Every structure is written in C-alpha cells, then in structure tokens.
Image (cartoon, rainbow over all chains, first blue to last red; front, side, top):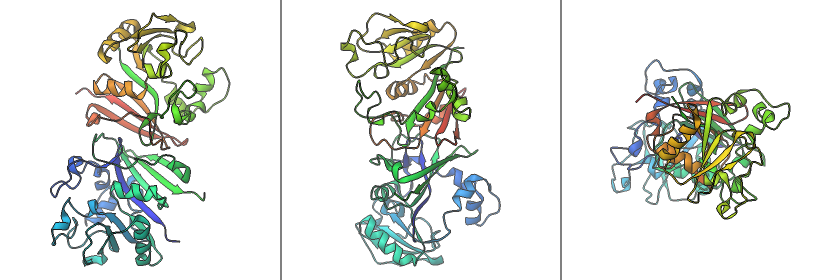
Amino acid sequence: MSLARVHNFAISLDGFGTGEGQSREAPFGHAGERLHEWMFKTRFWYDMIGKSGGNAGVDDAFARQFDAGVGAEIMGAGKYGFPGWHEDPEWKGWWGPNPPFHTPTFILTHHPRPAIEMEGGTTFHFLDASPAEALEAARKAADGQDVRIGGGATVIREFLAARLIDHMHVVVVPLLLGRGVRLWDELEDLEKDYDIEAVSSPSGVTHLTFTRTGG
Amino acid sequence: MSLARVHNFAISLDGFGTGEGQSREAPFGHAGERLHEWMFKTRFWYDMIGKSGGNAGVDDAFARQFDAGVGAEIMGAGKYGFPGWHEDPEWKGWWGPNPPFHTPTFILTHHPRPAIEMEGGTTFHFLDASPAEALEAARKAADGQDVRIGGGATVIREFLAARLIDHMHVVVVPLLLGRGVRLWDELEDLEKDYDIEAVSSPSGVTHLTFTRTGG
C-alpha cells in the first residue's frame, strides 16, 4: 500500500512551521533557518551536501527516513517559491538545477504552468487540485511507492484535516516564533486516529511521530 | 534568593492549558482531565490522595518538584473558580477544606474579598494587582522561600511576558484540544532568556524545563 508520509517537518514550541514575512530573500520569513539547524548537524545533511561529518544520533536516524520508499512529493505553493513566484516565468524553486526530491514533485497552486524537468530525477508538476485529488495523481506517479507530503504548514494541516496522512514526523524546536503559519490549528481530536510517540534528542529538539491506527 | 517557579503545568500539543467552556461542572472545559492523566499515575499523586502505588519514573520525578522550597502560590481567578465564582460568597476553591497548597495562596482577581483561612496551612488572599505587585506580596509571605506561579495559562503567560519567571516546568501532552486558552501567545524570542531542556517520558508526555539564564 502506498502511504502518505510527512518527514522532518519542524515547528516552534508555539506551533509555527514558518515565520512571518516570507520573501525571495527570506524563504522562512523572520524564522530564518532556526527551525532547521538541528538537521544541518546530521550526517544525513552532510551526505546530501557532499561533505563528510555530522552526527549519527537520533536526529540523524529520523532525518534519513526522508527518502526511503518515496516515489513522489506533494508541496504547497508557499514551499515552492516566494509569494508571487507565479509571476516569474523563470522561477524553478529554491533548490538549484538538481533539487533534493529526485521524484515527480507536485506543486499545489492556483496558477498552474507546464511541467519542468530538472536534473536528478525531479520533475515539477503544477496542479490546481484538492488534497485528495493531488494525492491520487501523486500516487499514480509514485508507481506503488509512498508519497511525501512536503509542506508547508498549511498543506500538511489540510491533508491532516482531510485525514489523508498515514505517517507523520514532526520536530519541535525549543524556540518561540510568536507569529507565522501554524501547523496545529483546527485539528481537535487528531490524536484519536494516531499512535503518537515523542522522543527528545540531546540536541534539544523533540521528535514526534504519528502513526495512523486501524480505526 | 526567592525564585518564581512553575510546576506541572500541562498543555496540549497545540498549546492549550485548558479547554473551552469552563464551568462549575467542567473546571477544564472540554479538555476534562485529559491534560492531567499523566500525573494521576505518579507516586506523587497517590501519596497526595493517601493511597499506595503509582509510578516512580520520570513523570513522578518532575511532579514532586511541586512542593519543595515553595512558601507561597499565586494563581489566576480562572484557576480558583468557575467563571462567576466571585458572585458566590461561599466559594472556597475546588479543593475542599484542605487544599494542596499548604502556604499563603494569592488569587489575582478584580473582585477581591477578605482572606480565607483553610486547613493544612493554606490561606487564600485575594489581590487586584499586576504580576510584579503580586509577586512582591507573595515573596513577603513566602518568608525567603520560592513562589509558585500556579496558573492558569493566562497568568503564566502574563508572568512570562513580564519576564518574572525563573524556572518553569511545562508538560506537553500528545493530544489536540483545538480550542481553549493558549500558553504561548505573544512570547516571541522567550527562549533567549532561558536554557530549555526537553525530556520525553514513556508515558507519552514530554517534560520541558525553562531555567532562566544570567542575561
């Protein structure tokens, strides 16, 4: 069965997945890279940027679940680009010529454009669709493998609200952003559909995993 | 030095310290007792209600920091009673004749009334005062010992915003309340004043401790 999975999605203690004031210069707004510093110290990240080093502890063990068995990604317009990217015909995401997805990648947008084939196996497809429709398209493209729901907070929240997520890994970072885009709004009683585990890391972050139960 | 301390303050994953719809019948609103079940299983709690049993693990280790070295408590009107308690001259809190505070206990309210002496060392004092003024009064009463800031969420948030808390223990419970009173609003950059540790428990909750740094 092809699962819908969230990995390495970081939020602040007060529940923000990104800051306020996102722009071309500040992809995460006033949050900067503070939600992701835990990941930059992992061996997973060092490997990805082609360096040696990094820690091989619990943060790394979680971080490297990102790839295995994933055949497609779905992301929101706000992850793909700065507000207004759809007016820039040259915009191809933040990640350079070889993005880290290496699969078909579906961008949910009200401004679809033709698909863009990148290096390394990533093809960006642009869809104006509901979460359920997008998941159906991504599953087809994933060819039996799982689909990663890549974020941002709004997209994950919509997929959770539609009860489409099978497995979710959230990383709670001990800082208070105060403003931005919240992950948890309007999700009362979500825990009834999931087994939830919490594991704190010596780095200070806490890993939460949500595993959908049969019910 | 007399510290201002928070202990055993439980919130949901989405940051609510109490639910919506608090009343005489539902002190925590729609949250019920779900934020406190972790504590009811500790040896600390069993001791308090005069029974034997309970677990002696990490939840218990944190729970029993509640008393040691505390000479006074400050709480909000919403912890002391249901909405409208000030119109009931007989109301003496939720805790029966022998409340679990055993010290002078200051209730922040816009409707002060004469002090009430209870059994076991608890005296309720009613104050219409700012956080800083209340802390000064409680410190005097604590006679050199620490002051516990007892909650609810609004009161703790106000004391945090005024940078009056020296030590805080928050328990994150893996459920989504969706509505109620939030602890974390308007506290951007709070982490800069504290060392924060996170420890997950096999019970599923995560203990957060905030220790004020010198800065």
